[in-house]
Length: 216
Image (cartoon, rainbow, N blue to C red; front, side):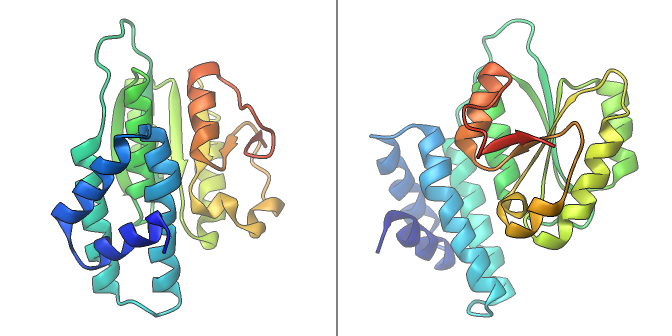
């Protein structure tokens, strides 16, 4: 059994303290980016797959998500020392209930010194646009977990491309890793398929690998 599978089992069992210790032990020899990419993301993907296959109940999926949320919040790093911080607005579109990936993205932006407004999942487009108009973020990151969210992600991205001043628009989440995403063209948006590519984009404004980060 690999590490992410072991951790997902702790999540499903509701073992908060054991899961936190497991993650803290992992962090003794790994970065937070590795934690998100190698441990938490595959653990939650596995839980999502078990739920889709009806091998766990909705209650079990909610319990696992809550434990993962606890662990993520307890181990997050924040960098508050940088002057003139850029601003990132992070949320899930209306109808999207998954949020753990969003929290990992928010944590990565905070580590890099951004001022972050994490709006959680299920944010209506008109509310999101109003906030962007008032707050003027440098980056808007939107995430979806399931394939049927792809048209909604496209709608949000296209709406934000009309905001003035125009923020960089990032689209990520499990949905963009699915084969059905290949047919969806989103002009002007950056597609982020994994967290290493996100880190590279935050630091340089571009991706290090065209296979993991691309502009529609």
